[in-house]
Length: 331
Image: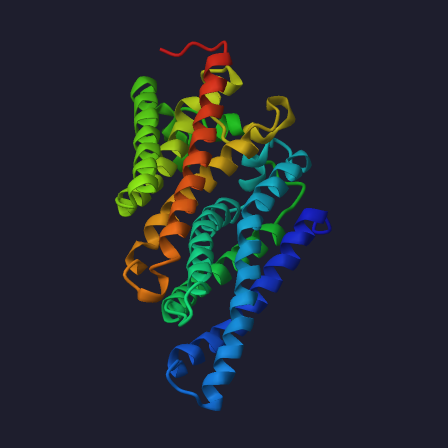
């Protein structure tokens, strides 16, 4: 099982990322401690050359971090036929205590890595590297999270045993289940639908306002984060029910299967894409007053906002089409 191609890819990628992180961390500390752009010393010139290398390494590391979230889910989905009782990735992740914690941490790191990449991109647009200290402090805060994810993921894969009987998604996401997310799908359906469409409408509307006026970036960022949470809850509460056309089946992983046209992949990709670019728009707001970024940053933020709007519109459109085409009628 350890020689499964996607497991090997995740292993190799995670080890490479860990190596890059561990190599970059002491270099980042030196940059934070010694950086002085006003100095023309040989040390400053060496540090400036080094920061190009470190930024490039971290860009590749965090780029893989974005990819690994989806690769991890795909791998869990591919592994489920190997375990008795598993019908989808829900059962594969429940085989040992490390599956779901790894998934949650990967989601958190996905969002944080994406924001770091945006900050890094903006920093390179300023001739004086105005965000260099901020982005390396941010990076150092991410180091323990990335390393913890590597450890959890390794424990999950190393402790996989094909003779383990696991639970199917019908058991994990049903009434009375002891699994924490299970209760999400029992929110009242009508309020959940109202909350979903109101939240997405407000988020998209605030995004358009920022795109046109250049104001309200923090509001748009906060609403994007709220839209992510509400949408995840809505997938459990009613979206998955309409897609499966079953009022009792609320698994978020069966959406990734061929029987449902792999609808989960575009659904999750557009949701996370909208959330990360929307949150990133607001995360860059404190830097608008920096002189060297005053010309480039507004345009970058508007592109992020427009990208987020498009992702959220596609996500909402996919959900709406699935509801309209479904034969399920919910009270």
